[in-house]
Length: 154
Length: 268
Image (cartoon, rainbow over all chains, first blue to last red; front, side, top):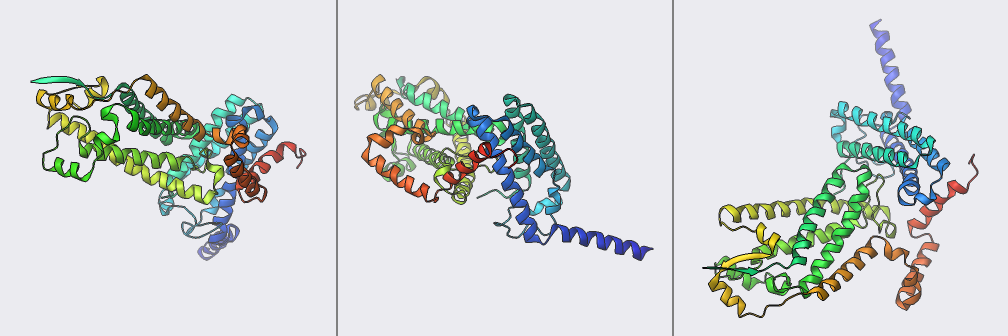
């Protein structure tokens, strides 16, 4: 029985590892995810903050949904053991403390998820001022995570 | 016996307190982030204007605002360290601190114009360079902040030191413009040529600094007349056009990418 359980755990963990892929691949995927989010963030910023005269409800809602989709995609799976070193599209900036700060990481990750989902909800209403406020909150949640576990450029 | 003299002119004092307030504001807005990061950018442009103003004022302002009056040359520093320096404005060590602060702030503002926060902020000149270089300059912006913070702390410690150890209040003259000095020192200074500033010089400094700040806030890139009137500028813009049409500058690609979704079919 014990043997079976060990085997099951072994299979489960190796399956997870196989799904997330090797270290370089995890890093590349997560960098891609954030780049894609960045494109959508820049679209919202442009239409809501910088040039509100170009505001297009559908375009902004599509971007907000895309950001929420990234947030809800289970990015945590791309932060496997050892992914604090390595090069995806570029060298990762993940701090090694990431693995010691699980509780804080969970908090900032949840804050980002909630903020992004709320933004998608607000974007659907087309209320530009509400979108702007919630968009700021998403930005704050990005910053909280960067401050916690991302190496600052020097 | 003491006598009260006018030392810091009004524009100089305004500059000082506006700078202190806007640097504090820039720090707070950067720390909070979110929606406030745009205010960080605006304050940065305002600080640029203040710095330009101070540099112009350092040439055409009144006596004690001028760089020539207090420039910390080696003979002056040597005299000061031997206790032989006599003067009423910035002493040579204070002058070193002033120049270090202005230079560090210039570096902060200069790098900030090209910086990005990897979230939703790009400096007004971000599009002129590629992302890697912007990241590099953002790194300098982060590092230079620590230097700035050290200089500000030193500045405040010096004020406290003068207040308690030397019994000299440095803050009051920066508020009122007036300083009490020994009459012996005053006689020596009154015989000196004292330069007054006046409204015209102030207006001139204001025009120069606000023009630079406006240009830096992105105005220079939205000014079509600059492309027509100045042959020199037209040449530069032609070069920019060539670079952009070859796709060597990332911003032309970005713009296309940003416009596309609105024009593309809904199910694209």
